[in-house]
Image 1 (cartoon, rainbow, N blue to C red):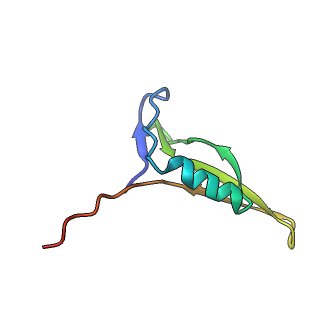
Image 2 (cartoon, rainbow, N blue to C red):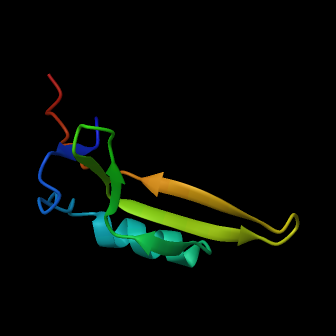
Amino acid sequence: MKPHRSNDTNEMPAKDKHHEAVKKALIKDGWTITHDPYMIPLQDQGVTYVDIGAERLLAAIRETEKIAVEVKTFALLPSH
């Protein structure tokens, strides 16, 4: 699935029902939530949103690791 795109920077995507659980799991794993949602400007195409931006310090090499997380829920289809 593609991240939400908009030409209107005020339009925010709806949060998935598991959004807060994913966010809590990232924090528990040592990530710092930096953006919720993470807005990415697109050259001449408005913006796109990713659900969560996060980062954590890698102490061994003293660098910062960054991720963008898109949260989606899929309905289970009945088996035939």
